[in-house]
Amino acid sequence: MIRPCERGDLAEVAALYEVVMRSGRATPAPGLARYLERVLFDQPWADPEIPSLVSVDSAGRIVGFQGSSVRRALFDGRPIRIGCAGQLVSHPEARTRAAGALLLRAYIRGRQDLTITDTASDQVRRIATALGMQMLHLNCIEWVRVLRPSLFAHGLLRERRAARRRPLPIGRLLSAVDDGVTRLAPLAPPRAPHATTAEPLTPASMLEHLPSVGDHLRLRLDYDEPYLTWLFEELGHVTGLGTPVARLVHERGRVLGWYVYYLTRHGSARVLQIAAPDRDVGRVLEHLFHDAWSSGAAAVQGRLEPRLAEPVARARCATLYRGGSLAHARDATIVAAITSGDSLLTRFDSEWWLKDHAVDLSS
Image (cartoon, rainbow, N blue to C red; front, side, top):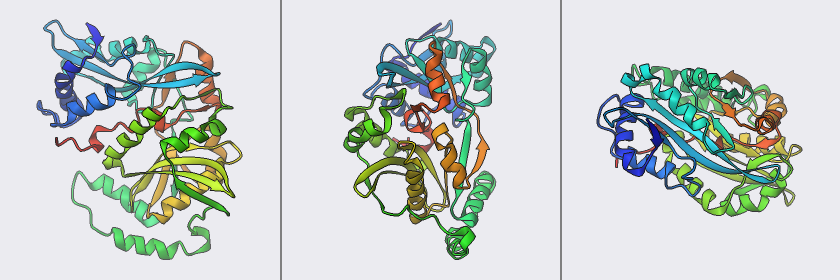
């Protein structure tokens, strides 16, 4: 049986999630149930009409879970609801009964106008496409702008070796090497566009300047201050991804747009959102590169979106196909707005940053 998930289910859901997705132990991390409650039930846009779902077996045990994060948006000026299909887990004993596929099918058939995910595994992707979800192939591409080549390469090796042995603590040495190497003209560090300045981006300033960035687009999030305040605070809890950085970029008194990313010194900065009109997006991107460089990042990585294709190519970014981005809507024109670039729908707006392994769950 599939039914809506209730707060009282979260202890059992956390235990299932710990077994399937985390340590494999029956006892979950102390803060996991509270974390799920915070991001799925307590966020300002939580919607009882688009709930997370659980699959219950004949003995009344929860054997599957589909997380739901709801977003409010505007499409052609009318309000719509977006369901972000997040955590999908099923107990190994329930997989022969296709618990995961049935949960996802039930979720896609929900009351939301658009269903998206940015984190589908290969297995989930196969199930989702069989159920009618559409691969967003451009959004499945990740771009990478290397800022400090030695540190970036060291970071890749460190990730690969982490499970086997402790990596050598040579980050400072490689940083010094990169500082020397990048003085050469072909590898010169990125510079901020002439006459641009930046200030901290706040929920209030984002709302103030959102019309100039998004009102001409068919699809964009319908942000409000309570949601953005919650979101900025929640981003700060995901310390495993780095320190959240949000900047509003100006040029001679005119706002160009903004960016939001996670900064990791001597590691890769992970971009959540770049928002600007088409004519200004390149300069906002350049300012982001300069900001990340100045703060010690080894590289900047982000999801490719149609409006970023040209400035990312001009910046000589490498690209990787990651997969994982899918969408479904009964009104096909909503998905068409995403694939054509007539939208502002980014990782900032999806479940991508909801990474339990990057949050302190010790209490």
